Image (cartoon, rainbow, N blue to C red; front, side):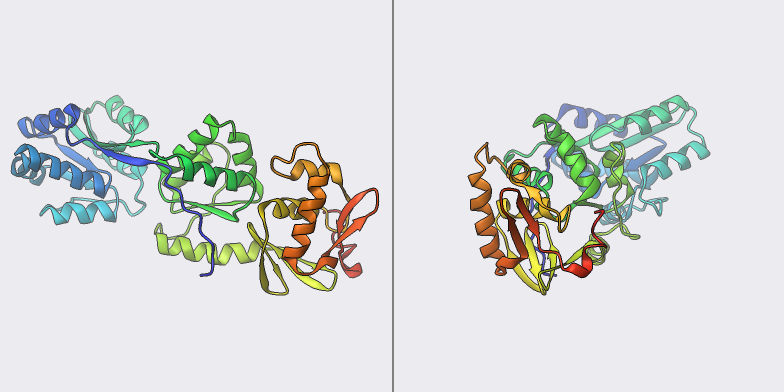
Length: 348
């Protein structure tokens, strides 16, 4: 669709096929069948069956699962269940663990054994609610989420979000969102991340479950009506152009993007320092912005205002229209907003 994509894994999956906890949980389920099994992820369910096969318990596990009430959190795990030759009894339309919990509590779980396949991290609210209602819960820890082995890509992505070098950031799982937040906090960038997501960078989530770690921090996200990657892409293709602000500057139509600028419909790549200056100028179109303020906007520029002049010269060259930005002697710089637009943008 024409976007420049900065990709960074925020976590990695660590299989627990050799983990004693998973082996113990599998033996417990084979020895004493639960009443209900909740499967939460396709990769987790497949990994569980594969691990059981490796231990020589595969057929015994599948035999047990054929005789229990098997619940699937969503269509992907439903597909994994059926690929294993099993049939789920029910799956929520919302793909939400909250709906699964509601169904179980409505059915009544007093005195029942419920096995829950954990999806990378504990589900304390889910498990505790079942136990509080009288259920015996058997956790099945198939894999765990861990930070990526190479933190370089996710750190570059964080820097890009905080510096507003991207227009949007997408999240496809709640653990990935939580991991990015955790990394930002570790680096002292959480405030900057939340500020960027609150104003300039659109946070887009594949669904409401994915959005929960961000919503807990007060971040409003956009989500497609259907919780799939295709609709997420379509939503971004609609949302980003509608948010773009076109400025009439020196007889040109200018749109500022995360890493580049559209001048009369032509894309002009701009270095990061130039983008920082342009964003600072565009916050008050037509107003003079002092060199000292522009210096603060430059990443790692120090105290030398000459850095502003150097970055400004490169910015003008990149834009290909030097008159877009005016130098105001002894004061600073301003966007050369067309006279007819002065009133409209006077209070921006």
